[in-house]
Amino acid sequence: MPEPVFVVGDIHGQLDQLSSALEMIDRDDCAGAPVVFVGDYIDRGPDSGAVIETLMRGQAEGKNWTCLLGNHDDYLVRFVGPTPNFPEDGSHTRWLLPQIGGFETLASYGVDVTAQDDNETLRAKALQAIPEEHVTWLSGLPRLYETEDHIFAHAGIRPGVELGAQDPEDLIWIRQEFLNDPRDHGRLVVHGHTAIKVPEHRGNRVNVDGGAGFGRPLYPVLLIGRDAFLLGPFGRRHLEPLPSLVL
Image (cartoon, rainbow, N blue to C red; front, side):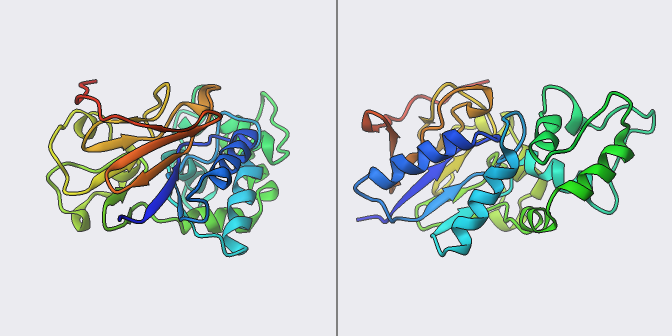
């Protein structure tokens, strides 16, 4: 029988939802199996810093947790990194656009943002407020994780390209080229990044981003081979593979 593995989708600063998801996993019959988090731990929600602290602490305590890098996590790393790429016209960098959620992440670390703050001022405040160990942890996260039955990546993979030749940016950013491709990838690809109403199985892939960043519940998924089960207050629910979806 294939080894079970739990997957948690995009958390987006929702600490209460993360706690609820972990409780659902602990109540499941397969509790104790490895857990993979597919990235986007920060932005939009109110508790980004606490989410990172929770994941770091779990790993430090020896929990079998694998955490992948998401594109939102990469925004933070680039923002406080040594060579941030800020717009030349003085406008806020993309991470700080309202729809992205960077301001909420800064607020979760106690950064006092004013209307007059430009990118450099906010970067200086972020460097003061965000623990170095949080940045180091995010900077070291892998973009790809494999098991015998699964390929995990935040956004997906570029179809037809060997895993060793994948563009690292595709692994955290790709959408339509991956989502619209119905071919079998050899193993089930498990990803987040594209928010839907509830995790779903599309035959060759499983999308576990149920939209917690937009106020929806964070329901974990249990994988046993190519079978996927949604966990929730209802217990386990088998996710029947749906037809390929063109977006």
